[in-house]
Length: 265
Image 1 (tube, rainbow, N blue to C red):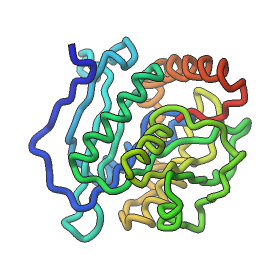
Image 2 (cartoon, rainbow, N blue to C red):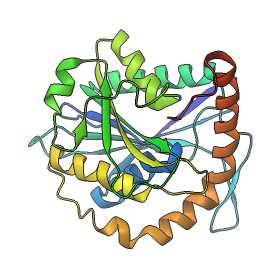
Image 3 (cartoon, rainbow, N blue to C red):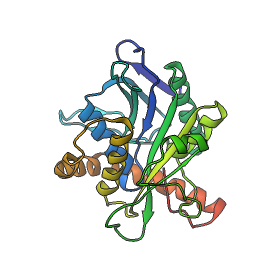
């Protein structure tokens, strides 16, 4: 039995220097909120859907009262050659163990390479002990040149000592991409480290940065207006699964590097 089942929707598009932006669940769900918002606002098209028995052993109940397996999707948005196209990696879950997380990240890099991808940006949160009034953005990368290319007034490059290990797909994609000579960076927003907190303010800062860099012309202010619907959906679909995955990762990591872990991809 194949561990990873990949369903292709339509034909593979020919994309112009595509950049992959990842936003899977993590602390404050800042990456997930940002990527889901972009998919809706850009009217991105679904390209792949991935299911696996490495994902949490649960199913969702949808609005039609039918079950859905947990999945991860890749969407794309083509801009007609005027600027780099986007690949958007979204989903309700992450793999539940270390080996599967490595395998999944390598699989994403395989699909990315097939589409002749050029750069990767992962999104995540930095968990604080109190709610930040104006969340700061930090970045790290596998390439000094990429940090220079994406230099921004709101992006802090001095991240050493600010966060612990970046756990999950958000970290591994950046690290493993280096082995393939693919430039990748993680953009992390401060948020409140509480499992019920939704880091919309952090997501908003990330979206403002992406809006500037890719000239997306999306109305970031709409995120605040839609927060109630977003929050209800996220809590319904991801809270329990995220808690299980997060606690498993924290326990395993704490046993190896100690309890000072303040960021989960």
